[in-house]
Amino acid sequence: MTQLDAGTYEVLRARLADQATALARSTEALNDRRVETFGSTALELVATERIRTENNCVPR
Image 1 (tube, rainbow, N blue to C red):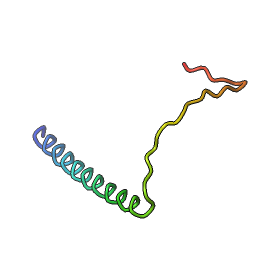
Image 2: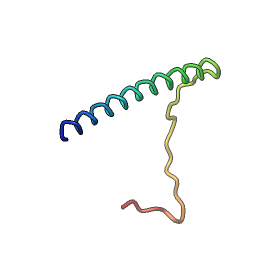
Image 3: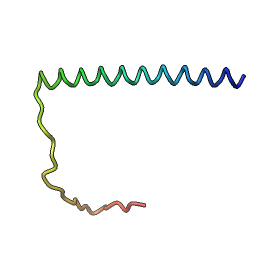
């Protein structure tokens, strides 16, 4: 039974890895089409500001 469970795990793991690869390829293709259609601009952080309110949160 342990041998069967290990084999099942490997099959499922391989299938999920294949689906992850296919998903990555399709998202890259979709992103390439988006860039071709709408163009692309680099995002950069220009500045940071600290916003204060009367009800500041205290991280815990």
